[in-house]
Image (cartoon, rainbow, N blue to C red):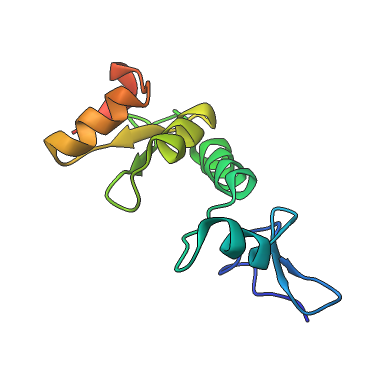
Length: 112
């Protein structure tokens, strides 16, 4: 059964046994290892979508570039992933700014 690509990450599939697999890892294995509920992000998918935004819009006519809204989901890893893909990070609070800086996001890639 194909999965809707606008909802699921590009590496998500249903195994022959009917189990959900994300990034090559069966979610049952993740649940056993980390417990539930569990929030799973696919690094490959996040980076490829961020890179696609960067490729489509680049730095071009946008004076401050393309930025990921940390309000959507802020974690040090996600912020690093989007910066590696060419985006900046938008922060709205002191906590978001502190997290971005702790994640190693360069100051010139952060907008408030």
